[in-house]
Length: 112
Length: 116
Image 1 (cartoon, rainbow over the protein chains, first blue to last red):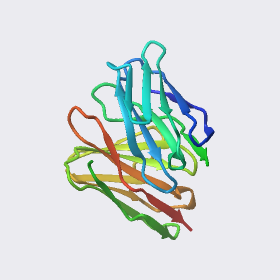
Image 2: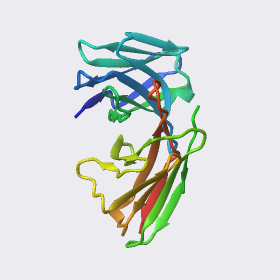
Image 3: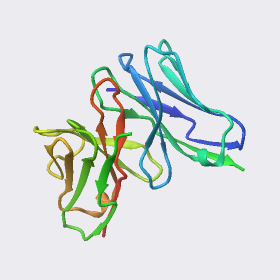
């Protein structure tokens, strides 16, 4: 099955700086890569996703890049704000399957 | 976006009792729902895939007789933790897929189960 690894496990950044989280996946057939943000005690919320036919996608301060050859994808948050503090999970999914394999999560803390 | 409702949000029960958790897709039909378990500061571990009108598919290591899943309609899936024990204490969360090309998953708000 799919194995998703995520780094770092914790990340502390100064407000206004950028945060980068990296994930690798093992199944070269995977073609859908969402990112979720989970605040303490809350449900995971989809913040951005990317498909394998696209190399990069951006939504305001959030961007995701995908390198299919290397089987890794990254989340970039620019101009971080205190409300960006949360746990972020990457995930991967094979074609024609809604089942997601999640990374271990990254706890992001934005220092004011 | 699509809304997934999960109840109860928190339950405390005695060891040996059974607990039922409901997951509803409020504004869309979900032929497939997923049940996850999450330990504090850990990732989401997929327990089973719930398919409407058929038996659930369990992940390796998950006891199907312990975690009963029923997906009787296109908007409701239930997870019953039978004869709960303290080691079953965890955060359980469901998700439902928005069918079609989007492949997006939407999560319920989760249920914190504490077994005394």
